[in-house]
Amino acid sequence: MRIRFANLLLLLPTVLAGCAASGPFNLGTPIPAAAIHGSVYGGSAALAGAHIYMLEASTNGYGQQSTSLLQGTTTGSADGIGAYVLSDSSGNFSIPGGFNCNTNNQIYLYAAGGKAGANSTFNSGAGLLAAIGNCPPSTNANPPSYALNEVSTVAAAFAIAGFATDATHVSSTGSTLAITGIDNAFANAALLYDPISGITHETTPAGNGAVPYQTINTLANILAGCVDSAGPTTTACSALFANARSASGATPIDTATAAINIAHNPGSNVASLFKLAASNGPYGPYLGTQPNDFTLGINFTGGGLNGPYAAAIDAEGNAWFANMGNNTVTKLNPQGKPLSPSAGYANGTPIGPVGIAIDLQGDPWIVNAVTNSLTKYEPSGALLSPITGYSGGGLAVPQAIATDGLGNIWVANYFDSVSKFSTGGTPVTSGSAYMGGGVAGPVAIAVDASGGVWVANTKGSPSSISKLNSAGQAISPPTGFTGGGIKKPFSIAIDNTGSAWVANFANSSVSRLAPNGDPISPSTGYTGGGLSLPFAIAVDGGGNAWICNSGAYSVTELSPSGAPLSPATGFQGGLVNGPSSLALDGSGNVWIANSSDISVTEFIGASVPVVTPLATGVKYNLLGARP
Image (cartoon, rainbow, N blue to C red):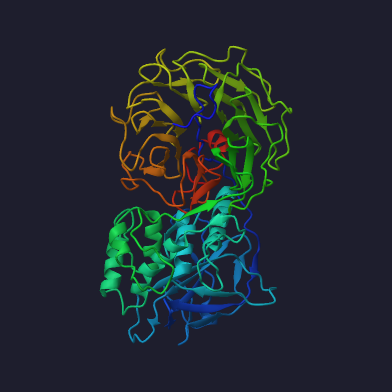
């Protein structure tokens, strides 16, 4: 375990999965779109006769069919998916302009079937994607050109995985947060590859992110064998489809849906899938040895990142990090571009920043363990708290911070108490703060939708979880809740049922408690999936628990029932290094703070989108829910 300061007994993180409110979103007035053209290739061979659809992500709810934007009267061809144009013998296609699309909706290209190279058989198993994003207006002087190939398919499949059921069902609700989330998800595809050339990026366009290009090329080569074949009955396709099933076991009908399924299940059938990547595949450089998993982790630096220790996501999808290495705060936009200066936000001199939370106004709060204070910023990074921070209220080596649905700030103090502050920074608690209910050495805190305040206690034998009501009165017994395998709990998160998920450092397990504190997990806790000295936990919009492991430098995913969804060694993509915290965003991405270096890792499309920030989830009873 890493000790940051010799004069402190423990400096442990809290992890707050982002959660947010929903509401109606103005989708805008339909506008005439620009003409679009491009080329469709399978590997290095043109895909002739492919059906090219222009589809718009639905806003009628999750799991809904995408909307076809083209008209059969214009293109001359249509089927059950919608109208389409055909690629010519050289793989080129052109979509005439003038079709209507909403300015704020997300569109993508889907190429189905075609004849690859010298193959004379129409390959119905070939499916390729390209994420376009916002509707290109007809006022564009030059028609956009896009490359559809296996690289564009991998990039799109992973980026929009949180909203995609298959290649023709990409959708969200029409809430403001959902539209923001899917917008950011579509934009993330361009982090991975160049939409015009169809070639994988090695670094993100902003220049501060290392892209896992070898993994992307390997996945593209896995798809290429099927795309370049004579059809679904070939070994290349049948083997791919058998090993790229959905979580429910459904077999994909084409390579685009296969890629989406791999994005949903990046730890499944890795060895079998890797064998399908030819050693002389069309895309390179590629992986020379089998990977641990197929997560696509981008490693970001800049914006003052230095020993990032705690993470939080705001309503716009920006990622915030408290840096222990240089006592600053970093803000990255949803595509990982630094918004904070190169030295980070340092106003208010946060010292020992071990926790961060975003309040209902979007303002980040930082808990400072060394100075026994709280620092508050505006979303722009301007200081709102006094230069010395907010103090009083019984702060005593504060370790973690959370917000409730009324805007109050709750802080876990390692010296056996819980403090409460108003949204203006005024202490609500007295000098002694709240005690009772077994509070003893708390290092993590979370608030549920009913106003219950949960804290994870590291002192006492056995270790325990305490619960207080909104007035600070104990709900848990004097010894706290102790069942379900709890042992040295380091982090706590609340799901959509009001249950508390707990990361147990001492026995490398995860516990789950019902709202009344009764254990749901077994007496040994949930294990497996790479759990190794877990440091932090968060719950996504599907009720899955995500845990970062300090013992194995990996990330574990558990189903709502506690079953491992990650490999036995956890997910290890993206140069995860000393993970101390993680946060989930509204686009389905997992952000991991690498406290052992100057970077953070983002797993693209690995989780189910969740409401952000956490405070909004608390207020509207949307914790662990999709936006």
